[in-house]
Length: 352
Image (cartoon, rainbow, N blue to C red; front, side, top):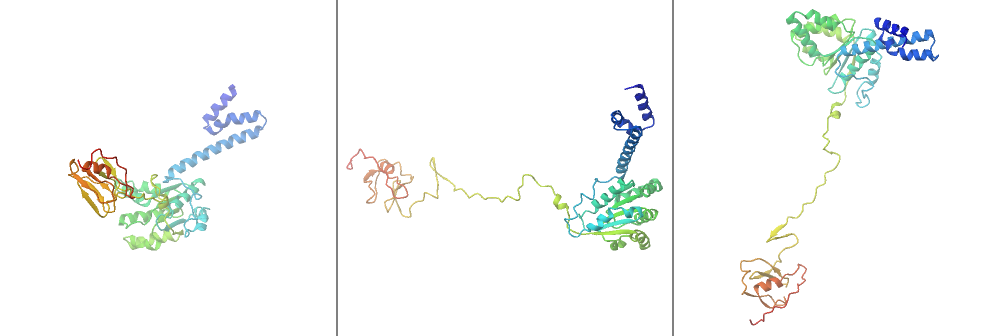
């Protein structure tokens, strides 16, 4: 950096030309490379300063507007609700009403995007250099009511009269007191020639009963309604589409019901399935040995099962012969399909 460059930087800083200071090195390199002549070099530096100042002014106006969130008309889906006046909304986006000092009234059902459109129009006005103020109507009334108690009402209402566009959201939501009606009348009458945007869930024809004094209501509504562009916004609410969903829930996937598993029943130390093992309809039980009449044998537990000396006789054809109760129990296990299990030959004779 030469001494001349350092002196020039100090001069730009003293003149508060920070836009030139930020791009000075890049523009100087273009000039040394032969891309910019002397006048071109000076012109682009001045344009850089103008751009910086316009950007800073826009950010200040946007901050003073106090929007709930910054939105645009392009973000608004006017094709979803079929009854929204899309053509009229695009015409309002031209801001001819702003240059004529006219107002805009957006009214309709809940959740159709009235506040979105109002803030988007305010954002367009801010980009064109207008000063905008957004607030809920109840908040504006509270601010003016507070000025009555601390004697700052004149100062507060001047702050509301000064903006080029004042946006009153949720206008005519509830019954007004006499003091609130008077404050609204003063605000609307003092803002004659300055644009006002109001959003309401009620039609302008339903605003009159909300004022306790019919004379004040007639004077206020005559000034407001007859100088405004009215846009009726009807259609389904968009808020249910923005409802947060639980990521665990899967409403689109059908729930599959698992078939009930058969309950196992305990018999001694083993588990058996009651659906597959059922006792035959006709059973002859002798000392713990259950033998059906048709020859299919099955062992059941009995308090007489331990009688070692007892003798049981199965029906004819069962193949068990004359045996003691424990031996008969061990040899009488058969499956349900009638297959007879093989049994070892008893070491004892039949006569013992």
